[in-house]
Amino acid sequence: MPVPVEPPRLFFALWPDEAVREELRKIVGGLRRTLSGRWVEPDKLHLTLAFLGPVPASRLPELDAIIQGLDPQAFELVLDRLEYWRRNRILCLGATQVPPGLLDLVRSLTDCLSQVGFELERRPFRAHMTLARKAAADWSAMALKAPVRWPVEGVVLVESRISSAGSAYGRHAEKRFRTMPEMTAME
Image 1 (tube, rainbow, N blue to C red):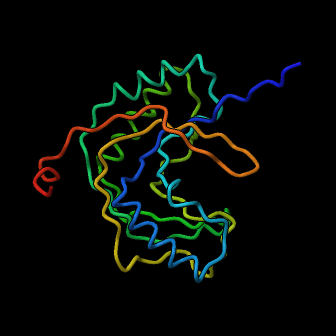
Image 2: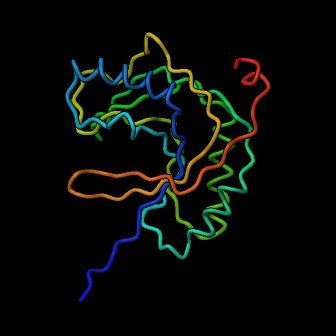
């Protein structure tokens, strides 16, 4: 008898481009020398907007329609804080100021998902990027000497499959944002 295949776990996330990912590699490299934990590989670093859990393939068209229906404007996210969440033993990057564009995106996404029956976490959104799990630190938060300035230009629907080797991520769908005039001028 065939073993039933578990549907992939899906989540919506912000996915850093290579320039931002390189900055993140440097930060993680420095932290690994002084802190212990189960580190997230730099190519897997992301900022989760909405976690859906296991989703049957029959629901993918709904999610594709949701992501394509989003119409936010690009924004800049400044990750300027290291945080250690002692209870969960999570080491992450956070933002002192969460841009209104990010909050609008999360609100729009969660409204759309709720309208089609997805049950989401009830706790308030907290913008963070997990760097390590099972971490150990003797502080709770500190400012980064050099903040990561991330021009966020899109959202991704990510598929996660878990195995004994860890999580493998694949991008299922992506939506690019309208470009901010200031971002175009910086190029």
